[in-house]
Image (tube, rainbow, N blue to C red; front, side):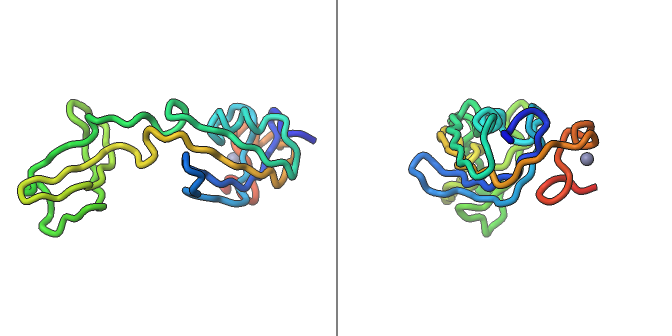
Length: 158
Ligand code: ZN
């Protein structure tokens, strides 16, 4: 049996940065394969046709992943707009100029009169690589296909 349309795939994965350092890992994730949005489309394309026990690698460039680094997302704000104990690494929610979107800003510099915050995703501009091991594979049930996600261990619970 191979990974294909409407199969439920159980995977372990590691996410590596461009230097091969591990950023995160998950085990026993089950998703419904075949354009249901269970995993990133590039990852799904790499897994197509894989068998249990097979390792698959997929590089994710900024266009498909975490976006490009945006200098405009770095903002200089008055020190008085922050709590007295503000320090580098703290995160605040805010809305970018001229928009209603909310973004997470990370404090990158604290001066006497100003604070620099960066609204870029920490992985913005980076090409990352998923290393995925296929652990399990079965045909999806009609109910899973109707719902658009996997049920059971590692999947959706209702
Ligand atoms: Zn469901």
